[in-house]
Image: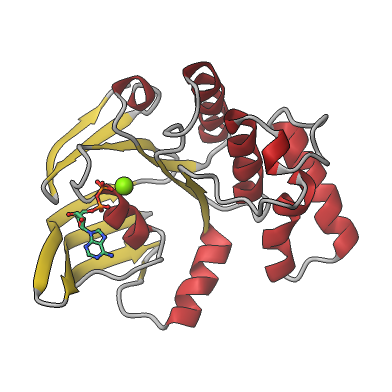
Length: 225
Ligand SMILES: Nc1ncnc2c1ncn2[C@@H]1O[C@H](COP(=O)(O)OP(=O)(O)O)[C@@H](O)[C@H]1O
Ligand SMILES: [Mg+2]
């Protein structure tokens, strides 16, 4: 499903060059649950942005479902993102003054789904993450773990094959982080491919495979179960 070969990413700011990724290669098959671990600054977010078609590598190739996505136009990349990938971020990235149900409806606006269907699907997605009684709450009225569950519901409404999560439990208390991991395990059981960045071993322990990065290179790749 995902194949990256010899990926490198160099950021250039004024005269400073940072090699965020150097010659990274791996494959991820459909249905895997992979944690990407590594210290701060090791290139995890850079890798996630490339895997999510939010950014392109400086060199190397990325093939997603048989299609090279390294040299596509921004419009085509946006279409691939909308169809295939659900994103979950550390800071939730919800609209602050907008209810949970409206936050979840948003991606379907871009997908051109009519209002009634948007609402029905958003409600179902919120019930699935255990927030059936919080539909009309705004993010400020929800705990961190609840906000992240809204973000998960939002990432699922277009039924993406791949879920990319960058430090999904980085801003929430550990009891709530366990709930988030239970949701991820359930999603993985129903066929979603999950790629989750974390630097917490307890969180990575929920994945079936752990890829470790350091200084922009892969230094470990282990199947756990
Ligand atoms: N947009 C950017 N411009 C310049 N340097 C960047 C940019 N994004 C990340 N970097 C640098 O690339 C390296 C890897 O960063 P990042 O991928 O965010 O690592 P991680 O997510 O593992 O903390 C760091 O040295 C960081 O400072
Ligand atoms: Mg990061």
